[in-house]
Image (cartoon, rainbow, N blue to C red; front, side, top):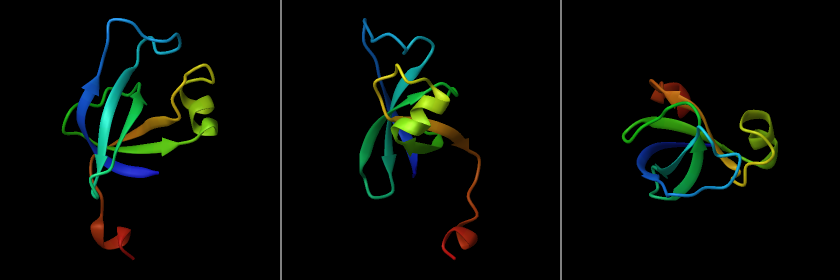
Length: 86
């Protein structure tokens, strides 16, 4: 899993089946690495999100017909940094 911030959206006039009602977002982690993830929760630019990776996560959350394996699974309201570093 990756904790990151939404830095932008990916869009186009056509998309693969299975992406109806979803957004594609560019997420950046603290090290500057970026991934494109599917989002059905409604996250926007500047939001902190938790992204999970893998076909099992994808199958359980957005469906096995979706071509992406990175899925936004939470919009983060806060992180207790002391406990996170323990």
